[in-house]
Amino acid sequence: MDEQDKLQGHAWFTLSGDVNSDMVHRVFDAVADMTEDMITDAHILIQSNGGYVSDGICLYNYLSKLPVRFHMYNAGAVASIAVILFLSGQKRYASSTARFMVHRSHASAPSGARPEALRIIVEGLQADDARTEEILRNHVEFSEEHWQVHAYSDLHLTAAQAAAVKMVHKVADFMPPKGRRVTNI
Image (cartoon, rainbow, N blue to C red; front, side, top):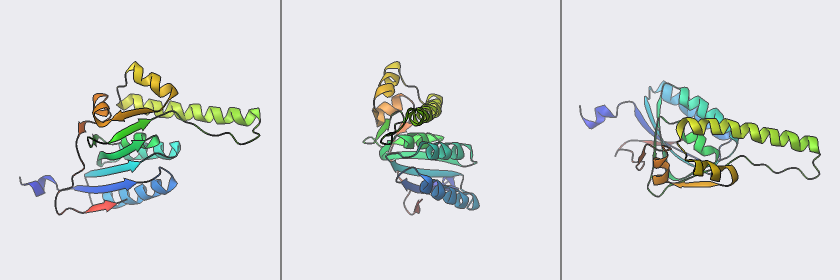
């Protein structure tokens, strides 16, 4: 079997920007094309500093259940809710100079907010934290020290540190084969 036969059904993509409803729409459209093109393995380079929790969780749930094997790559930064999107990959890689950042949810209260409104904001943040933590615990083996940092601050990980906690399977670069198309989502 030659190299081209091994790559039958593989395709390469880039996905960048804020995790929001626009990204969800772009991914839905791209996956529709992938399934029509009978893609079995989608290699996706993600570059994102995060965005909206619900949009990230939607993408995680969607991509992790599809009949396409997703290979996710971090070549620069995958942060905040984009980490949850990244974890939808059955195979996950990061360039040696890439970084990850995870943190708990946060929001700003509107000026003059009443206690009832503040309570609703806090309950929403706690619900978002519970959802993202469940996904993290299903994929990543943080130490107690990692969880302590995560509880009160931004937790930054290099590619090597991400590999040590199983966030990535291997420190490796996104390297589409010569002559293969790379599609931006």
